[in-house]
View 1 (cartoon, rainbow, N blue to C red):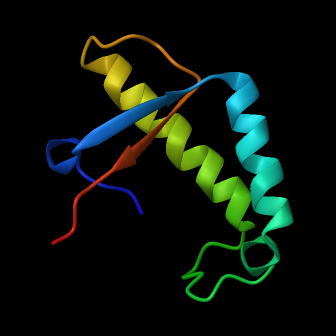
View 2: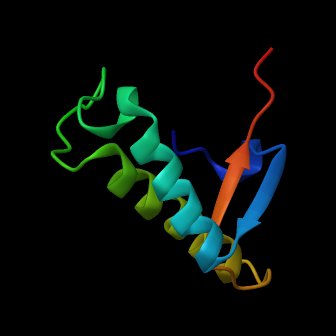
Length: 79
Protein backbone atom coordinates (compact mmCIF):
# COMPACT_ATOMS: atom_id res chain seq x y z
CA UNK A 1 0.00 0.00 0.00
CA UNK A 2 0.98 3.57 -0.46
CA UNK A 3 0.29 5.75 2.55
CA UNK A 4 0.23 9.48 3.11
CA UNK A 5 3.42 10.42 4.96
CA UNK A 6 1.38 12.05 7.72
CA UNK A 7 -0.10 8.65 8.61
CA UNK A 8 3.24 6.82 8.83
CA UNK A 9 4.27 5.55 12.27
CA UNK A 10 7.68 4.19 11.28
CA UNK A 11 9.88 4.64 8.21
CA UNK A 12 12.79 2.28 7.58
CA UNK A 13 15.44 3.24 5.02
CA UNK A 14 16.64 0.55 2.61
CA UNK A 15 20.08 0.44 1.04
CA UNK A 16 20.54 -0.76 -2.56
CA UNK A 17 21.63 -4.15 -1.19
CA UNK A 18 18.54 -4.39 1.00
CA UNK A 19 16.31 -3.59 -2.00
CA UNK A 20 17.84 -6.57 -3.83
CA UNK A 21 17.37 -8.79 -0.75
CA UNK A 22 13.72 -7.74 -0.55
CA UNK A 23 13.26 -8.59 -4.25
CA UNK A 24 14.78 -12.05 -3.70
CA UNK A 25 12.54 -12.58 -0.67
CA UNK A 26 9.49 -11.81 -2.81
CA UNK A 27 10.72 -14.28 -5.43
CA UNK A 28 10.93 -16.96 -2.74
CA UNK A 29 7.43 -16.14 -1.53
CA UNK A 30 5.55 -17.75 -4.41
CA UNK A 31 2.17 -16.37 -3.39
CA UNK A 32 3.43 -12.87 -4.29
CA UNK A 33 5.63 -13.65 -7.28
CA UNK A 34 3.30 -14.00 -10.25
CA UNK A 35 -0.33 -13.82 -9.26
CA UNK A 36 -1.43 -11.04 -6.96
CA UNK A 37 -4.88 -11.46 -5.37
CA UNK A 38 -5.82 -7.78 -5.94
CA UNK A 39 -3.67 -6.56 -8.85
CA UNK A 40 -5.96 -3.73 -9.95
CA UNK A 41 -5.12 -2.31 -13.37
CA UNK A 42 -1.35 -2.55 -12.87
CA UNK A 43 0.14 -5.26 -15.13
CA UNK A 44 3.55 -5.29 -13.41
CA UNK A 45 4.65 -8.09 -11.11
CA UNK A 46 4.42 -7.54 -7.37
CA UNK A 47 8.17 -7.09 -6.88
CA UNK A 48 8.26 -4.35 -9.51
CA UNK A 49 5.42 -2.46 -7.87
CA UNK A 50 6.99 -2.89 -4.42
CA UNK A 51 10.34 -1.52 -5.57
CA UNK A 52 8.79 1.47 -7.29
CA UNK A 53 6.60 2.19 -4.25
CA UNK A 54 9.50 2.14 -1.77
CA UNK A 55 11.73 4.19 -4.09
CA UNK A 56 8.99 6.78 -4.55
CA UNK A 57 8.51 6.96 -0.78
CA UNK A 58 12.24 7.63 -0.37
CA UNK A 59 11.98 10.47 -2.92
CA UNK A 60 9.07 11.98 -0.95
CA UNK A 61 11.11 11.93 2.27
CA UNK A 62 14.09 13.41 0.41
CA UNK A 63 11.88 16.24 -0.88
CA UNK A 64 10.97 17.02 2.74
CA UNK A 65 14.67 17.49 3.52
CA UNK A 66 15.32 14.08 5.05
CA UNK A 67 18.37 11.99 4.17
CA UNK A 68 18.46 10.46 0.69
CA UNK A 69 18.05 6.68 0.52
CA UNK A 70 17.60 4.11 -2.24
CA UNK A 71 14.17 3.18 -0.90
CA UNK A 72 12.02 3.61 2.20
CA UNK A 73 9.61 1.07 3.70
CA UNK A 74 6.87 2.58 5.83
CA UNK A 75 4.64 1.05 8.49
CA UNK A 76 1.38 2.10 10.12
CA UNK A 77 -0.34 0.93 13.26
CA UNK A 78 -3.79 -0.22 12.21
CA UNK A 79 -6.01 -0.55 15.24
